[in-house]
Length: 277
Ligand code: NDP
Image (tube, rainbow, N blue to C red; front, side, top):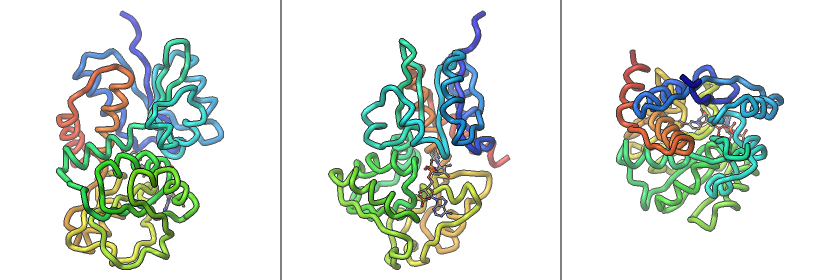
């Protein structure tokens, strides 16, 4: 029997990742012979680690914090949505040894909001926290859902402004710093910062959340994140963690690698139960 095709998620830190769990279930479900592990690589080691992985026969990588912009530079070819986002969260080996970069984060988020949580964004005010790799992937798919306006807030405001320049042809988009947030509630607040990963909360004024606001943290864990806990304490309508986004973006990556669409609902409910156990 031939060896399974090798895949992995590369990040720093990465030990918390549930991607191996998800992809092993996708593989079992679709009868694919593949292995999927985690690779911890510091930013200085990212490029050599990725090149070694592919040189040694690896077929594909998911890329997570903080390497998504470095992955963009490394890829030989980009999909249109990765080029547009300026960030890559999945790499695939192509014929001739070329490395293709794609971005499935935004599609995964949009699918989770629409299909798993039935959230309609059309005509709503949307606040996006963060302007890193995950935010870059999310802006175009979110504007595609036609919010009335979308504001990007980031500590480093220049990074938020760069996203506005990149995407302002797609809808009403603004960039601000946390000190300019004000106290008007938003209909949907999406946390795309890495703050929860460090157990931190961005500097948010309480008034941005009302009893009608839906708050979504891309980060996920066994317990509430600092952001979802904060939002629940302020009486938001719903607080959601990004487990569904993780499963949906993984399914898009799986499709890129294996040309097969796995069933996400069964994997999402198994993962939710496992995290609660
Ligand atoms: P990056 O390192 O690319 O970007 C980090 C972002 O977070 C920057 O905007 C940074 O702001 C901001 N930030 C970091 N710490 C703080 C803080 N304490 N307060 C306010 N802002 C902060 O990370 P990614 O974009 O790749 O990932 C962001 C988060 O999204 C992570 O938690 C990751 O786990 C999650 N994620 C979840 C996915 C899912 O499928 N559920 C998929 C992708 C990501 P600045 O620029 O000012 O430094």
